[in-house]
Image (cartoon, rainbow, N blue to C red):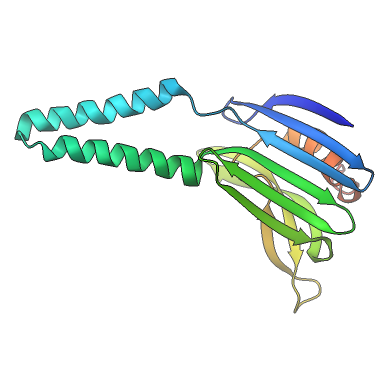
Length: 186
């Protein structure tokens, strides 16, 4: 069974959540954001190159133009390879664990696996970001030394920060139904 839902992030960008249920104990969630806009890419490139041309006219040194081109290209490659995530996938197999995969705009993929035995709880965490309170879904990992302690807090979706209502309605209830009963109270 597969379904798709569209909603917006806290900045107003469109996100698409695809849910695939392979069996009652195996499900996959894909959160996709829009690709990089050619308009914004062109605007940033033109701004940097116009500023470099302005410096070139002042100092009459061609190294300024070469440096601007080089910095723009390196910045773009770094942004596409390390920052811009196109899709995040969460594969949950109840008896085995959770696999989180992030696909970057450059084609690079980063995968993390967490054994289900290490998961203590799933919570909605909050943080203050740019004068806003944002909420995100996290996994609390058990501390191997202290039985009641938490060793690590792992955010599930790295880039796509969604609204609290959307986390509760579509992500938490469908991803982790075994952890949601005590969260609906607040």
